[in-house]
Amino acid sequence: MPARRSGSTTTKSMVAWDCPRRRSRPSRHARSSREDHMLRRHFAALSLATLCPLPVAAQGNKVPRIVIGFPAGQGIDLVSRIVADAMKEEVGETVIVENKPGQGGSIALGQVARATPDGATILISAMAALVVAPHLYKNVTYDTLTSFAPVGRVVDMPMVLVVHPSLPVKTLPELIDYVKARPDKLSHSSSGNSTVSHIAMEELKHATGMKILHVPYQGSAAAMNDLIAGNVQIAMDTVAATQAHIKAGRLRLISAGSLERMPFFPDTPTIAEQGFPGFEANAWIGMLLPAGTPRETVDRLATALNKIVRTPANQQKFMAVGALPKPSTTAEFDAFLRAEYARWGKAIAASGIRAD
Image (cartoon, rainbow, N blue to C red):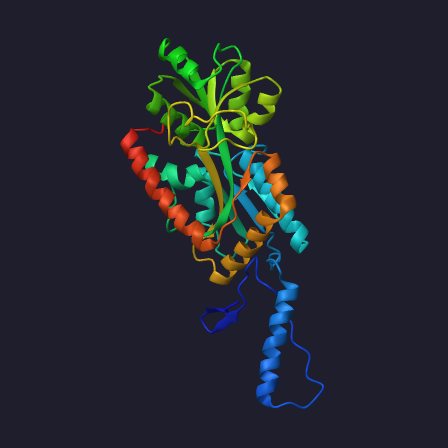
């Protein structure tokens, strides 16, 4: 890693994912200085490849931490803990997960944006705080396109439309008719203002003409609890948040929000199939670092993340919590993030969706 200079003093960068260096052994036979130089470079490269197949733990007693903007037990929390456990298995060091809920994940993003860019603070964020909230709130304390260094996409969290079992509906057309006969009499929960569960439902209401009251909660668990209790009647949320309740009969599955039928519920028609072609409700999750993090640190973490997401055992763990693995390069995720930021900005402006 490049050295940092402060005045006339040079110190090593305290980069969480830096790699220790090892000297190559001296040659036992006489060689020219040119040959020795080439061999030293060759063995150094081999040493690094052996010692550092993945980024290693933080130096200077800084424990790497993954920061997320939602409570424990939510889909993004489960995904983040799978990633943290996989990092521990690969490098032999603990990576902790810190839950910083609030404002649909925006509080966590603001904290990471201000963190020291040494690789020790890692952000795993749902899409809403990155590409939706900045278009709805004027007081967000970060700029999605300049405050972070994208690392890679992690998973997609497909959404489903569910209702309380007391509602006499089993299909989307039946739900639309039922709601339109009772405008503003029913309510839907969300995991918080400007979260994907909120915005996806607003898009569906806009597309179908349904008038339903919005009740935001702090996290999907609280939203599902009130839906199961019958205090609200409808929700659009992730497979991770709803799957167990659907299988137990506590919620009724109406539609899949994915463009194609999802592997979790292959017999359930999509919203697109039921009269709204092109409709998609999907919550992607990505990994980022604070802007200014050294390029080599970003690249090492990206390599580690890609290996984790591509490993079959980890893919099974992601699928078990309702997530679809989506490995990517840093460049691919950077381009995807910018495209999503622009797309959601236009969609929110056109739909008139408000944060409240």
